[in-house]
Amino acid sequence: QPVKQALVRKDNYKTCSICFLKNFKKLEKAKTDYIVKPRSRQMLEKDLEKVTNFRENAAKAGLLRPFLFLVSLPAVARLQAAINLGWTFIGSAHMGDSHAEAWEILSRKDLGLRDRMYKLRDTLLRREVNWHSILLPLCEELCVPAYMNWSEEFVSPKMSYPEALKECHQVKSPNLNSLENEFSDKIGKHQRARMSSLQACSLAEIKNSEHVRKLLGMPQLQPQLVQPLLSYSIDSSFLMLARRDGSDGTGHVDAEDLVQEVVACFSGVCEGEESMFEEVIAAAKAKVCRDGVVMERDTAPPGSILNANISTFWLTMDLLDIDTSTPAGKILPVILQMLFHKGRLAVHGLKIEDFIRGDFD
Image 1 (cartoon, rainbow, N blue to C red):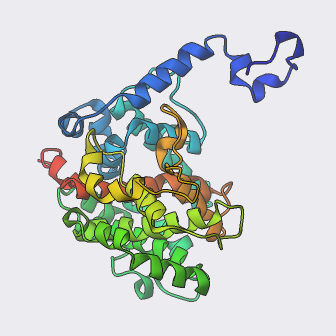
Image 2: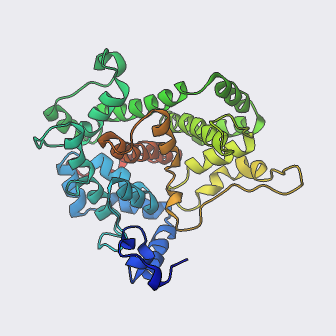
Image 3: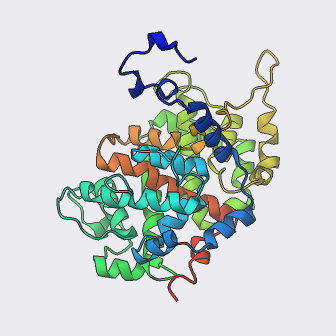
C-alpha cells in the first residue's frame, strides 16, 4: 500500500515508484494492458515479416537473427530483458512497438547487448559487433576452460569478424544456427552436472512416471530444435520445485507438478497454445492433496513481470556461480531467453530462417 506523504523520506524515490511517479497508476495500467494483450499466430507471423527501419538497421549490422528472436518473444519477456540490462520501456515512446523494443535491446547506448560486449571483452576499443561476436565471448568464458581449445569443446567454427558478418548476411546461417544450439545445450549440461547423485536419481525416477512419459511422447516435442529447451526445462523445473520448501534442493517433487512447470516453460509464443498441452496436463491439474483439496500451480498475477519465464535462468546462474553484476551475468539471461525461445517456436513449426528470406536479396 502507498505510504502517506508525510512519511515519505527524501530519498524514497529511489525505491518507491508509487511515491515518486505521479502517474504511476496510469503507467501500471498501460503496462498491464500491453503485457496481457493476446497475440495470435497470424499476428506473430505478420510482426516477423514486417519491414521497418529498425529491421533494416539490424540486418545491416549482422543482428537480424537476435532481432527476430526478440520480436517473437512475448511483450513481458522483452520488458524483462530491458530491465535486466538496466532500463525499462514503461512510459517510453517505444513501448508497444515490438520492432522498436527489439532494436533498443540490441543497440541502446552503453546498456544494449551491442555496447555491453565491449565491457565483456574488457577493452576500451570500440569494435563492430554482430550476432556471432556476441555469442563467441560468452561461449569462451562459460564453456571453454582455460586449459582447452575452442575446437575441443565446440563443433561450430570460430570465425573472424568478416567471416561472421558474411554468415550473418545469409538467409541460412548453418554455423550460427549450430553455435546457438551448442551453447544452449552446453549450458543445460553444465547445470545438470551440478546435480547431486540424490537429485539425479530422483529425477530419473520421475521421468519414468506416466505423466512425464506422456509429455515426452508428444509429437510436437520431437524435433531436434526442441530438445535443448526440453532437457533444460525438465532439469530446471525439477531443481526449482526441489527448493520450494526452503531446502538446498532436496525437497520432494511430484511428477504432476513437474509436468505443469515444464509446460509453463514452453508458453509465450501465441494465443491458444495451452490447447496443445491440454491433454497432457489435464491429469496433473487434478492433483489432490491429503486433505482432499485440489492443488493448483502457483502463478503470477496478470501483468506481472514474473510471467517472463526467467526464474529458471537465475537458478542456472546461481548453480554455475555466475555473478549477476558482471558483464556476462547481465547479458546471459537475455541470451538464454532468446536461444530457448527458438525451441518454443519450433514446437509451433516456426523457424526464424523462414522470415528473413527477403532481407538479403
